[in-house]
Amino acid sequence: MSNNTQPLNDIKLDDTSACINHSEKKEAGFSLLKYTFIGMLFGIVFVKAEIISWFRIQEMFKFQSFHMYGVIGTAVAVGIISVAIIKRFNIKTIKGEKIIIVPKPFTKGQIYGSLLFGLGWAMTGACPGPIFAQIGAGLMSGFVIFASALVGTWTYGFFQEKLPH
Amino acid sequence: MIDLIARLKAPWPWYIAGAIIGLIVPLLLIIGNKTFGLSSNLRHICAACFPANIKFFKYNWKNEIWNLFFVAGIIIGAFIAAHYLSNPNAIVINEKLKLTLTNFGVTDFNHLMPAELFSLNSLSSIRGFILMVVGGFLVGFGTRYANGCTSGHAIMGLSNLQWPSLVATICFMLGGFIMTNFILPFILQFN
Figure 1 (cartoon, chains in turn cyan, blue):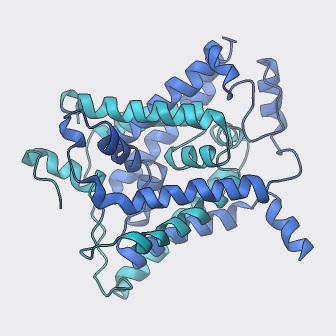
Figure 2 (cartoon, rainbow over the protein chains, first blue to last red):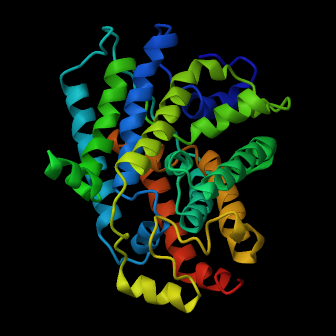
């Protein structure tokens, strides 16, 4: 896609983590607002289903409530069926392009990184999506968590080549 | 009409929330060939604001600007929900969890987050600092190291039947289980 600045062995990593835009058609201005509308729906759901609540996350990891398992399980089920339908019937985008989903290549980083992320998720009660929803809901703690998460991402970028993958 | 508004203001059930989140996967694919994934936005913001000549942040983040528009929507939607659709009743929390937290002096059960742990004031307490600052760091560092989060791996990756995403999902559920049950009781002692 856009990345000619990294050596070959990094491109695999990069293809999935940054360049996930497979539309060849350029979009700008008002056309991008459709993503904002979908995001708004998502933000409302995050707050109204209490997915941004630290209590709900604690209940999940203590097996004290079915709620979060229900949310994630339903989302995965709907997602699997939707993607299967798209593939089976070769459904195109609204602009007539073929739909492309890049496979997720396996790296050991998925084990180390996911374990670390899991620790952080249970501490803050927020994964990256809900962090933005916490900010929108006016929770001051959301800004702190967001700033720390940016520092974490930046630190990963700084040490990326030295970390085992 | 009043009944509808009352139902919108009450907490939404898991099957409604799960179905809407799941439908975002095909919606993004069909309207723009976009793959659902939120943690990469943290990378795009770093690339846009603090690239610091680091290779990992040298790419054309503007190609991914749709995702930042998506995130802007999340912020607006959360604002709308919190201000115009907020639940008039206190949040319902499992009694066992309440008891556990009360023993650590956490007694604010009226909001989505307990104020004793998550507020600007609690930032000066050891446990508040660890939970918000160290926790936030682990979220940002871990998701990038893992190349995805709950949306990119658990929802998008599993929807596309990717086994690496299943490994990632199991690992972050395991990490969360260890934190909540074994490490958090230790952290919460440091008020």
